[in-house]
Amino acid sequence: MKNIFKIFLFGIIAPVILSCAEDNDKVMLNNTSNSSLTVDKSAVILNETTADQTALTFTYKNPTFSPAVQFTNSVEFAVAGTNFKPSTTREVAMTQNTFSLTHLQLNNILADLSVSPNAAKSIEVRLKSNVNSITAFYSNILPVNLTGYTPNPDLIYPKINVPGSYAGAAGYANWTPANSPNLFSPEKNDKYRGFIWINTVAGVEDGKYKFAIGEDWPGNKGDDGTLTGKLKADGDNIKAAAPGTYYIKVDWAANTYSSVIANFGVIGDATPTGWNSDTDFVYNPTTKTYVINSLALTASGVFKFRANDDWAMKFQPENGDQTLTSGTAVKSFLSAEGTVTGDPAYKVSQAGNYRIELDLHNSAYYKLTVTKL
Image (cartoon, rainbow, N blue to C red):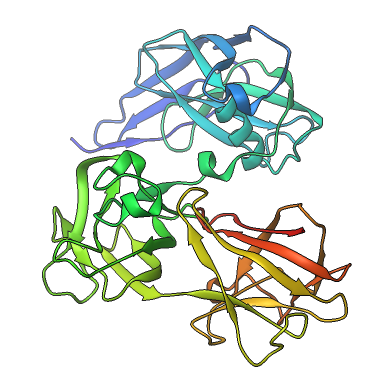
């Protein structure tokens, strides 16, 4: 018998009529008791140093229906006064009556709602019970004041690991997924990118790597054996062609990867060699950053960073020339990723010798620091 379900909501009771197309038998579904939701705190200042610790604990009671039907639960969050448009949800098990959220989870919820950090914001929370894809029943609404923090990009963006024989010399550990460079997904779309540094490819086993996920070997991927940028589960190790810095992109779902050499230097009319040549960075395995220990910069010129003495790949401000403050790290943007508008450059306000450091370990937040010596 073919069943066609027609669902109608009538006020608070919310009866549902189920109709059988062949014999017109009908069953009235009543929401016999509403769900309820309580929370142990009314306000929390979130803290990154306790990111994995519980910040709020909720207690809830499921709705009941007659006759009994299957439904799923989620908890819904929104900025107060927006009528839950937009909102963000987190799944909740039906078999429990409590759930907790950590400082990091709540901070991510604030980010989902585009709430600025470091200021208290009133957030509304409710339990949402879905009987089917179009009919939902809601609990009471709880107000909670949350103060978020500026998150560490290492904690909020998805990542995969790049274990290999190169990693020990780069300041990590050889063939250890939990202690290896990572590729991050700034768009959180299963597409990862980032940089690794390889000191030598001289030996047969030197300069090799593959990709892992979850900081462990199960689910790892390597080359499919064709050396055409295709991946497969437990595939072959990938060997770099030459020592240097590599920019790697991985589409985890599509099982593809690319790897290009990208050795960076600084260039510009603020530098001693002007626009004629670059001053190259040196990788420091202790800090895991790229460093120029001392370079004379003028206040009248500008500079930027490019790879391989070419202009295809540059680190620049996001848009417009940017004057840097000594010792203060700023986010830098890679032109090849489509995040730069125009062709901006960096400046310093005072002439002198500077230490320049590029931290490329996280593609969601490339970091530049210039420090006057």
